[in-house]
Image (spheres, rainbow, N blue to C red):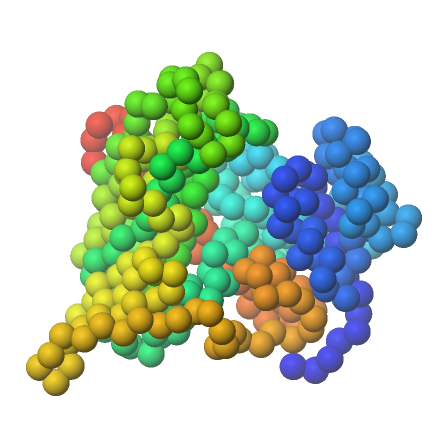
Length: 366
């Protein structure tokens, strides 16, 4: 990859926690990225972000459409509540900007398809913020899958289980703004990882259940303080059974609040014809049979083995994700997540939610 010293001028729409906790710190580590515009419906929030992360003379907006009129802005990070992902992303793509949109892609498949179509129509890059792919354990699992270590993967678990860790800030508990609770918030990461390792994006049907069993509790022992039962309108846990066109099965489990000690967030396990693998013990464990004996290999993720990406940047998953996005913008390489893959994740989440509401099996129309 030839060196390219061009500075990319970037903008952030939505300056809340995901922007200041993930996107902006990662962008700050990239010497070839300059954040020149910040937008938030709360002006003071955009001003604070601009003061800490902005280039000299960075502009502040409360209307994202005014921001998009600036022809010098080349990339946009969409970090708003889920409901607005689609129309802001489409407008940004139509304005000639490359977009990285925070996960999930959209609140439903219709809105996600609008984003996908706009990217194809404009020829602009669209990627979705599933930074979990850039963890060391995720990269290792994917590499083993590509080597054929697992053989044909026909069963997998996608797990994002919290015991008592309900996010009580922002609009996380608002079903209208977010489209759902733990399934669309953290279950989406686990599902994305699982589909990616399997390299399987053709769902056939699913069955889902969602529960509102604990969200009216008080004195909750929640990690971020007691939630407000009146505002907790999304599910507290959700589960799905997904069958793919090739017959493979995925079990998806997600919760913010569940009476369990089996707590794992955004991990996957896969079972194939040659071996199995999981992320359950702080690294990767591979199991199988060799020379007539069962074997187990525990792979440590504590050091080494990290792919090198051109340019400066940190070693956190979000840093690698940002570097891959800006490499795609500057060099035409692939971003971390293709929009077609994120679209499939949204379709499956929608299928699980729909099945849970109707009590019926949900079939995907391909």
